[in-house]
Amino acid sequence: MSLKALKLFLAGVACTILAPLSASAADCPTNALNVQGSLQCTCPANGPNMSIWGTGMYTADSNICTAARHAGAVSTVGGEVMVSMAPGQNSYQSTQANGISSGQWNQYGSSFTVTPVMAMGPEACSTIPSGVDVHECTCAPGAPAGSVWGSDPYTDDSNLCTAARHSGVIGENGGLVRAMAVSGLESYRGSAWNGVSTSDYGSWGRSVTFDRN
Image (tube, rainbow, N blue to C red; front, side, top):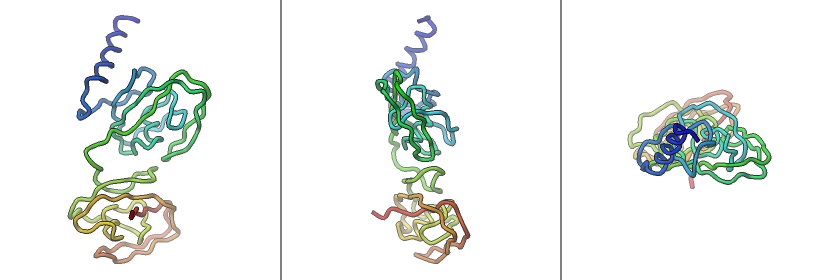
């Protein structure tokens, strides 16, 4: 190993070991080929879909942030993840999850898993992100109203806090909501529930409802 390569390797190890979890992590590398042990890093919002192989356990040359979205560790809004290296596997399964398709591969020398780094709390609600099936977020007290179409289910571009108040999942004091994507409808009927009015709409490709458990 050259002196320059050794310095880069030692710097990467030091960052991985010494960086506190509360610090803002650096952007994730393209893949995990040069990751030693584990690495905390940040996936950007709306990153491109790159090639990955496997499900849960990915080949080390898979794109880290695409694998993170496939695994459900982050959504399209990005976030911090923990990349953990693992031994190579005899085979890697191809699946589709969270709007991402992974490839199948046979034996590979090294693998990684990717898990979310939990933030202080759920993000503020807006709309359910594209390609995400379940989305947890929070509505502040007195959150401004947004446009909503339908009467539970709603079009998936509806404002989640306003829809959650309309459906009775939360009140004026706000709170945590768990939004779930469901199939689209041929038409949506507006109504006035719980002091909130929603609008009619025609055919739409995806709907959103709420977990009441």
